[in-house]
Image (cartoon, rainbow, N blue to C red):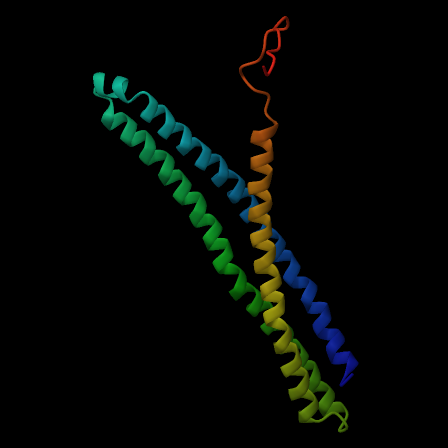
Length: 180
């Protein structure tokens, strides 16, 4: 409403945010999927070790089991750090790209102020303020998208496990038991 040409300039910059954020979103989803698999591996190691604790002690395999558990947890830690690193990078990236957008708008506004005396400093300041106000919602949107991506991968993993065919199956000629 204040100056549609300057606002249009900024809205050409907004889609540029989508490119690095989409790349980070894919990285987070991929790392989240692998982290879910690593959690399952850690659970398997624990179950195997605890159910066979007598065998582990009998063959003096405590150090081996401890190193196996340590390797799995270290691998999970690396994957979790990738997720945290991508999340931590998202806010500065959003703000950096938005700053370039604001700078472009200011440069164009200064050029227009030199060309047309009708465009005043108040117009420039109000547009810069409105554009700055849009940065936080965009940042929140991407943070929510990252969280939804992680939750989506966790849900996929749950349904993947639930959809597996059981290893133990009834014989083809098995008789069903009555409830009585």
